Amino acid sequence: MDETQLRLDGNAAAGTLRELFVHDVSAARGQCAACGTIAQMGSQHLYMSPLSPGAVLRCASCQEVLLVVVYARGRYRLGMQGLVWLEMLDTGEAVGGLEATR
Ligand SMILES: [Zn+2]
Image (cartoon, rainbow, N blue to C red; front, side, top):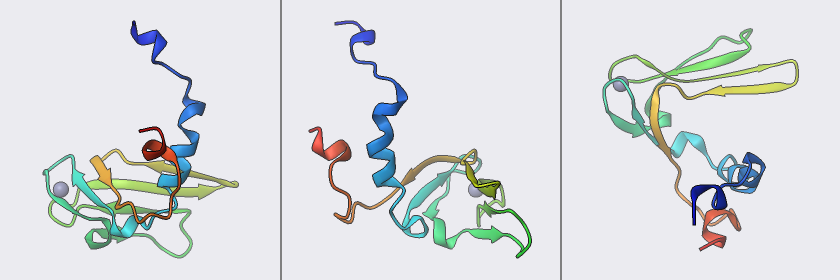
């Protein structure tokens, strides 16, 4: 079996991603790509103003940008350029996804 037999197009990930983004991200843990610190997103530093189209979350340890979220013209844009990974606790709210395939 070669890798093309295991590959699907990105639409196949829609269900898993939809379940992932219903979780409380402030309780999620992430690792800073700059300093390696692992912390809950809710403990990081948020920069935003009431009139801005988005927000910037910075690492509380080194102040590097962890993620940026912007809402404009009916679209959300999420950049997670400063995170190595983001881990969300499965609260049992999601049904299916990766667990359903195992
Ligand atoms: Zn950091």
